[in-house]
Image 1 (spheres, rainbow, N blue to C red):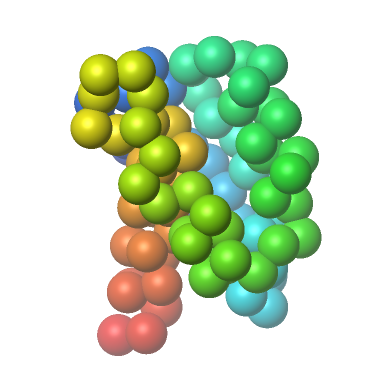
Image 2 (image 1 turned 90 degrees about the vertical axis):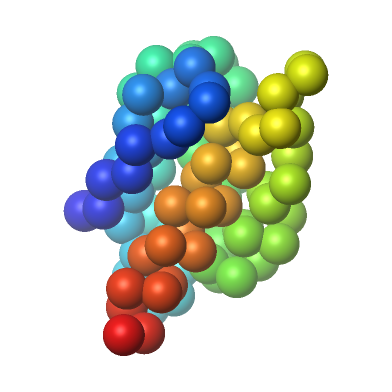
Length: 84
């Protein structure tokens, strides 16, 4: 299980796992519950790079980031650590 603490958004924590390059068991703590549950279900089983490509750069209102964008940052950070 991986934990990521997002910055600049309503969610306080993102918990997820990666198995064979596929996303699984995503949970957002805090934030817009329905939307984040929807994102969690949509990305389940998807390839990590595909999720990064789809979610990276999404903004929330006037913020420069969003919960989905923060999740893409969490996945990038995970990949960097896994490849080092």
